Amino acid sequence: MDDEAANPVGYPSGAGRRLVIFATAVVVALAAGFLIVRLVKTASEARLAAATKQEAAELPRVDVVRVGPPPSTQTLVLPGETAAWYTSTIFARVNGFVGQWFADIGDRVKSGQVLATIETPELDAEYEAAKAKLKVAQAEVQVRQAQLEFAKVTYERWRNSPKGVVSEQEREDKKAGNGEAIAQLDAAQAQVALDQAQVDRFSAFEGFKRVTAPFDGTIIERRIDLGNLVTAGSTTDTTILYRMTLDDPLRVFVDAPQSTVAELIRVGTPSVVAADYRPNQSFEGKIARTAEAINEAARTLRVEVDISNPNHTLIPGTYVNVTFKLTSGGLIQVPAAALMFRTKGPEVAVIENGRVNIRNVTIGRDNGNVVEISSGLTEGDKVALNLSSRITDGERVEAVEADQEHAKNVAASAH
Image (cartoon, rainbow, N blue to C red; front, side, top):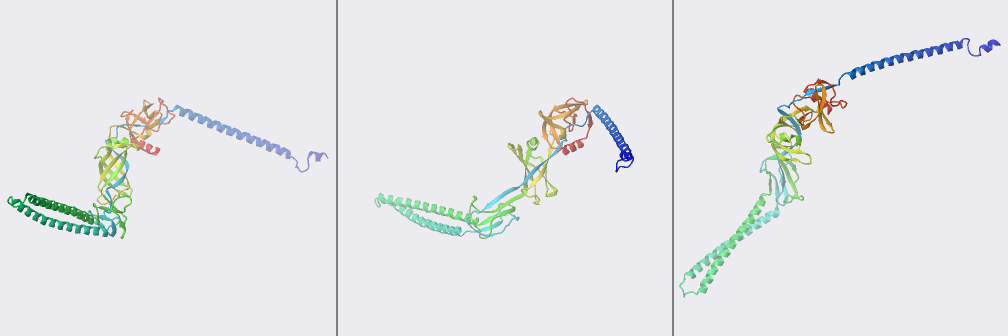
């Protein structure tokens, strides 16, 4: 009875002792793990504190470049647009319908070449009527000339008759008849001149039945076909016959930024034109003229470059890149990565005797990865690149000189 009470049913003898031993082992393992983690964390914190202390003791490192004047000649690449030397829209000068057309889009034509013919039955009838009217007027002149000759002879006979043979009244009557004959002849001759002008006018219109090219060029649009009715004139309601261009030489229009006006305003500046669809070709030209005024809306200067295009390689109306060869303006050139834009405007950090000196500068021209400074820097200054905002004016730093190529790469990567 006592054994059953000491050993409950279902539990083997010694189970309680084993449970106590297992629990003790778990507690010991957890304690050992906690101690190990604590020691590792303490060692890591100690190393981090030491590294932080060492880093705080070191001066901030900054990349610097020594600035100077830009090269004597520079290149500036700007987008441009090609345009034909001449662009002409050809309208009809007479009313009628298209009889034939001889030129289509893409055709290269010569000045005076017939592009189409226009049938003008109404004009033809008016022309013939005008010529007939001219003949009637010319015949009338002949009649008036004969009447004048008779009146002249009669007047001379009566004028030279002795007094008393004819009366003065008859003599004056013959004189008046002679003057009237002269006036009638003058009127007939004037009518001939008027009718001749009308015939010449219709003759000129007859010439307009042949539509011709005004210059050597290329047909870029045809809007007529056989039998189409056409109306003389160039209003919005009249039919366009052709559009053609002259693309040799070629104009290239460039809108240059205001900052480049000092250089680009010079007529004769060399330039090179390149197009994406002609990757292995370039076309040399020069500035032929400028607008001589800034576009107030865009703050740009319209520049025109003339280039030869004898093989019609470039097409009017396409975008191109224009590279200008500019002369240096004598300003200080710095990498764009050296500029800082703050509340006071553009600034540059100059490193002097290991300390940061923040200077206000004035930008003379922005060329992308490099910027020309008109005031605030002198040749030989060391400027910092991409200076951290945590570094303040007067703070000591460790300057590491970088070459100009590295500075340009830094600026390019910043974009």
